Length: 233
Image (tube, rainbow, N blue to C red):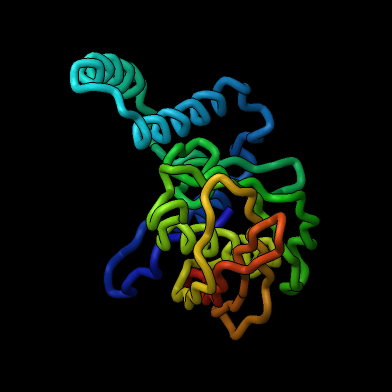
């Protein structure tokens, strides 16, 4: 689990980070593996819906009919709104997952469908140790910017999420304080992508990690980033 919110102004009381909230909840957190498949199927269907809306060429009359149908579905979903909205889970290996965040939350259809390879977690009492994290995704027309390429903000989200996760699983969790991005080439849509990241070092509550976005079949790097994360005091 990573928190992708900016570091708050210390003069303004801030709600706990997702990581802090998860530790406050302790053993009451459910295991995401216990969620039924239908929960994730709904999210996948919503992602496909957004992609279809972006690319549709239906006429105005058909769009009006579908608008009414979608409004009915939206009202049905809103009628059973969860409170609090955030959904956290703890896996059997102790890893905490924020299921609703916008970087890779599996219950958030707005998030890119970013899936991470299995991660060997260090001991909870160990000093931070470098662990490489690899995420896999495929961006659709809903993530487009220039023709046939991803929007730069989506690329930044993928790198922020993966670099932050690399710091977190290495034992150096924190809120994003800075992200230095370098775009090397356009990131293609409808093409398997890898996001690789690794924790590098810590200076007190400040943690540093790096990563890159890679076209899976060619190994071409399309963007690189250095991230700084600060553990809440």
